Image 1 (spheres, rainbow, N blue to C red):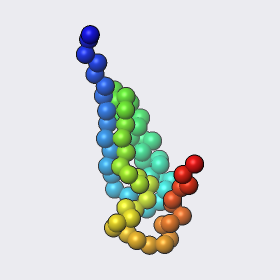
Image 2 (image 1 turned 90 degrees about the vertical axis):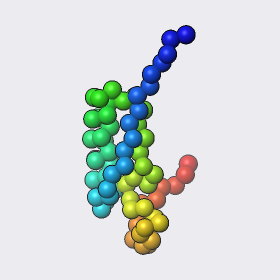
Image 3 (image 1 turned 180 degrees about the vertical axis):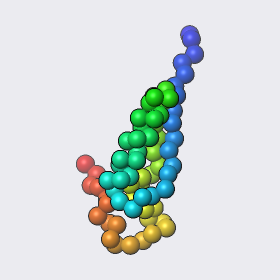
Length: 68
């Protein structure tokens, strides 16, 4: 059986300060990774808000999403 290669891309980036700009930033990275041949892309956990272990501030609680 022939070997199958799957290309992956990993992204960890700095927080910009708001959800929409983080989404935009990651969409840009998806495009770059796809053009470079990536078939799978992995983002950092909580990629559009501050990491809760570093910043525990109620103003960011609204960035959470309900689990469906």
